[in-house]
Image (tube, rainbow, N blue to C red; front, side, top):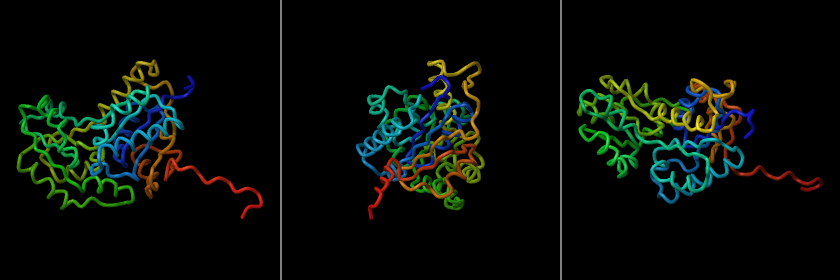
Amino acid sequence: MSDQMPPRILVFDSGIGGLSVASCIHRHLPGVDLVYLADNAGFPYGDKPETVVIDRCCTLIARALEQYPSDVIVVACNTASTVVLPHLRAMTSVPVVGVVPAIKPAAAKTRNRRIGLLATPATVRRPYLDRLIEEFAGDCLVERIGHPSLVRWAEDLVCGGVVPVEELTDAMTAFREAGVDTVVLGCTHYPLLLESLKQSLPSVRFWMDSGEAIARRVAWLLAQTNQLVDAGRPVAEPAPSPVSAALFSGSAPEGIARFMSELGLCVQLVRGDWPAEPPAPKEAGSA
C-alpha cells in the first residue's frame, strides 16, 4: 500500500455484530480505513458445520483482500474465531486477529467471584470455553447462558426493531439467581444490546466485551510496521467516512447506512450480494 494511504483494517462477521468491534477500532484509531465484510447470506454460523464456516470465511475474505488489500484482518465473530483462524493464517500473510470471550479481564474485575457468560448456544458448548474458564477463572462460579434469540434481536435493530425487554429479562433469570456481578458479552452482537441488558440486570456492576482488547491488538500490529505515530495515533487524519465499504454476501440490510452512522461509522459504499459480479453490459444491437 502507498505511504500516503491510511492503514486499512478488514473487519469480518457473519452479520452486523462486528460493527461493535469496528466502532471500538475507530474510536482508538480514528485515522484507519475500515472495510466491513458480513456473510449475512450464511447467517447464523452457530448452526452450521465447522467445514462450512471455514470455507465461507476463507473464500469471502480472500475475495475481499483482492479488492481491498488490508494491513490487518479482524474476525469479529466468536463462532468463526473458534475454528477459522489457523486456516486464514495459512492462507495469507496479513495478520489475523480473532475474538476470545473476555473471561480473563472478567475474573480480574469481579468482586464476588460470580461471573455470567452470555454467548450463542454454539459458543457455550465449545471445549475451548471450558479451557478459558479453567485457566483464567478457575476460582469463580461461571454461569453460562446460550440464548438463541439475542443475535436475531440485535440484527433486527438495523431496521428499527425493538428488543423485547420482558423476554430478555426472563432469559437472564439464571444470572440473577446466581448473583453474578460481572457479565461477559461473549458474542460481538451483544454490545449492541447493552442498554437493554442493563435494564434486565440492574445489579450487574461490570460488563465485559472484547472490542477494546481487539482495538489495542490492532494498534500494536500496526505499530510493528511503523504505521502508527506517538500516542498510538494513525498517520492519517480522521476521514469523514471511516468505513470505505460495507460488503454483504446477501442483501444489504435496509437502513444499514443509518445504523452505522449512529455508531460513528459513516460508510461511503454499501454493497449487497457481494462478491457477485455486476451483469456484463449488452453489446450494441443485442436484444
